[in-house]
Every structure is written in structure tokens, then in C-alpha cells.
Image 1 (cartoon, helix red, strand yellow):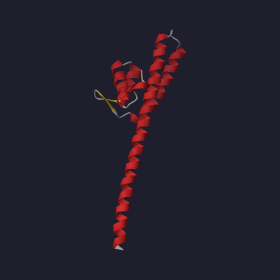
Image 2 (cartoon, one colour):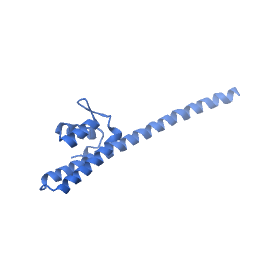
Image 3 (cartoon, rainbow, N blue to C red):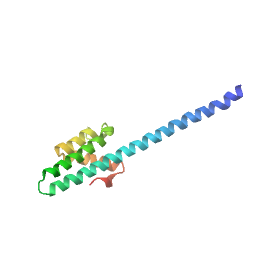
Image 4 (cartoon, rainbow, N blue to C red):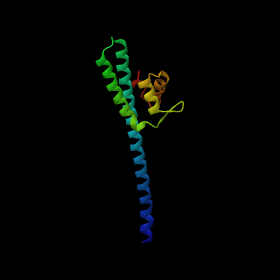
Length: 123
């Protein structure tokens, strides 16, 4: 019986450790996917905003920008508490950039995307 326990305990410990690593890997993969989605939505918003700024004012164009901003806000929600510098969270910087036209805040969220490896998704 003692031999069986000596053989089983290391196997159980290995399974527990492997299970934790696998879970951590999945969590990291999920976080990467969330960041990529956010940066994609941010880039889409920037393009829509820039296109609306160059066109003659058209209410439907501005509605499109608002709809695209909504998609970016939804993509940001699971990441909202991540810091982007300057004492701001991703949520605070995103709102400041999209609703208040804060270029410093926009720079911070663009830098966040760059630091996450998704710099090509933003302008």
C-alpha cells in the first residue's frame, strides 16, 4: 500500500501542476484575444471618425461613428481595469478619447495596443 501511495502522489501532483499551467495558458490566450478585439474595434473607430471628419457633415456618418464607438466600448469592458499610464484605466482613457476627443487619452490607448502587440490595428 505504501508503494502505491508513493507512486500515486507524484502523479497526482504532476496532474495538478499541469492543470494549473494549462489553465493559465488558456487565460493568457483569452486575454490576448480580448486585447486584439479591443484594438481592432479601436482602429475601426479611428478610421470611421477620421472619415467622418473629412466628409461634409452628414448625420448618418456621425451615427456610424457612434455605432462603431459602441462596439469599441463593448470590447473594452472586460479589460476596463487595466492601466494605461497617467493614473488612468483603459476604461477612463477610452471614454476620454471617444467621447471627449482627448488626444492624450487616445495616445494612451493606442500605446496600450502597441504594448499588447497590436500596433498595426490602430491608426
